[in-house]
Amino acid sequence: METDVKDTVAINWDELTFSITPTRSMYIAECLEGGTWESKGLVPYGDITLSPAACVINYGQGLFEGMKAYRTAKDNVVLFRPDENARRTNSGCRRLCMPEVPEDLFLDAIRMIVRDNIDYVPPADKGALYLRPLVFGSGPVLGVKPAPSYTFLIYVSPVGPYFKEGLAGINLLITEDFHRAAQYGTGGVKAIGNYAGGMYPGSLAKAEGYSEIVYTDAREQRYLEEVGAANFFLIKGDVLATPELDGSILPGITRKSICEMAATEFGYTIEERQVAIEEIFEADEAFCSGTAAVITPILSMTHRDRKMEFCGGEVGEKTMALYNGLNGIIREEREDPYSWIEVL
Image 1 (cartoon, rainbow, N blue to C red):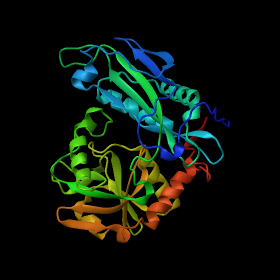
Image 2 (tube, one colour):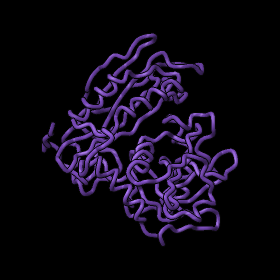
Image 3 (cartoon, rainbow, N blue to C red):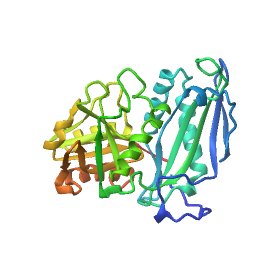
Image 4 (cartoon, rainbow, N blue to C red):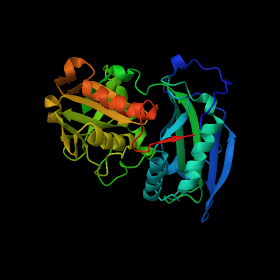
């Protein structure tokens, strides 16, 4: 059904950045030792209390998700593939020895928090309401072992573009000095510990004038993996290549959607495989994707003393066609042949 703006918040939608704006409420559920998840429902947005021995702050037992609610051209508020986030959450919970969150509880909580904060959803094309589900070991431990109790929490915030450059495109630096993750670790999970290690190399790249860092594989340093916290794509002719999910790559939901749409509607051959650094120097275009980034064009990539400018340093037409195709579905500007959109 259509949703109405409540006009109870005063936000300059034109100046939104990807940062925290406190909202009305957050959602909490708890799972005590050996028990099941018990919903506490909505509570006012604010601080939470943790034991100093909480497993999450001692051993990093926790994960997060990233989702968005959008106001569309039809003035609906919609979610994009929330069932995929629920499934990815539970895959991560299994890997991190945490109890799975029932999919119905996860989805009901998502709908509840968006409806309660619906006046924080920006107008169409002014941004989105970012949703941050968290699952973490909140119970106290001293030895290295799973927590005795857990918390499932969701907070929300209206946001603008993840990269300040937005659709103007970004410039990237390929690093061989740092690695995001290795095979057989937790690189394929949105574990909280995966992200702190990227802050330093990312800051070094930004100090040199780049938008973000690009990681290579930890074994050979020959293959491209992720763009900071986003998936990577390369276009060459009618081939769309992206690093394969080998355990060190996050299985992005936007990534999955782009692959499906590009093959079905745009005629691309999708290659999920190792993507060598050398391939960028013969590619037509490149872009990165994620819930936060959506599709962000890449203008250039620098490796050692070599720089590759795509499309003469301009945003590529093929990238923009894919962006418009995906964004058109999200914004209800065209039909959704995949049933990806849920209207609240």
